[in-house]
Length: 382
Image (cartoon, rainbow, N blue to C red; front, side, top):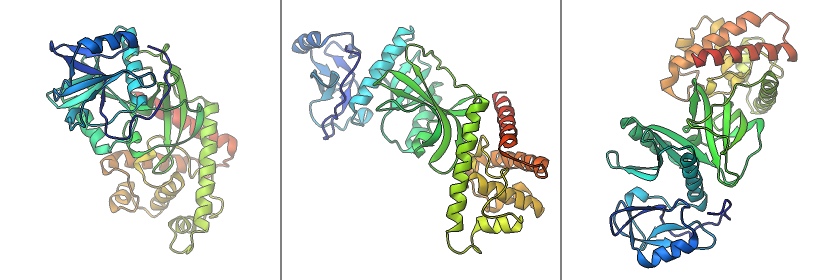
């Protein structure tokens, strides 16, 4: 099978593409690159194929552009091959199958698990279900599928599909809700694993710091499939120089947020302006201790500068963090993360009280924040 494929959109009608079929002898036939196109053309003349789930007749399609694949002869309502697949998805599954096969793992392509009525893109050693997700998926469906695998003591691993390579380094990432739900953890440190068939590389979004509902600051790093291991390699913590870039992005985001609040209209009813007034802070230039990046802050809906102002103002009024959160004034993204939010807010208060009377500038705010980051990394890895 050629190493590179030209990606073309499959027909817009609802065509379900499959890489595994059942023969007339009830044997499974896989399209994993073992046969050349010429060999497949000869096999197609003498063999009939059927869907391993709904048992409907399948066509073996062998074009010059798209990857050889099976498709139902008629538009199908086959429940377990319910989604039309792109060339990106088919190509990615094949490369992932070859990756696991070369590492001598037992890899089963499009494995149907009758107990939970789910089909994994790849089942590895009957212990890991690898899902290569190239299109948006409702979070409820993603969580349901993960729960199904876990019921069988199978660990779900979600890989986001990439159409093309992405830039590496520290930067602002725009993540959709279902992509956030695909997060995995290295000692509780969140990261997202991605795979790009075009260059046969794995990508990592790691060291993720929450900014807003769809924006995160993180590190993008790639690893060639030829150097990848399994279980997959874990991302490394940030160096101080990399963390300096994180601080810089947060500072820029904070300035943008402050500017938006100053021109939002009525300052009397503006929460940011009111908090600055209560704490006797300059609304145009709050101290650098407000708006700092902290791991785990995705539990809060508000941007860092706002929730940090809120918890300090509550502390000054003698209101406990727990009471502040339970009141709903400090909004959470997930009510199940109340304890995480309480712990994070209390840690921030301790940090603020420790340094509030010190002279803070660009150099020592980096030292302070990086020290907190390193301590949290060690804590989360325990």
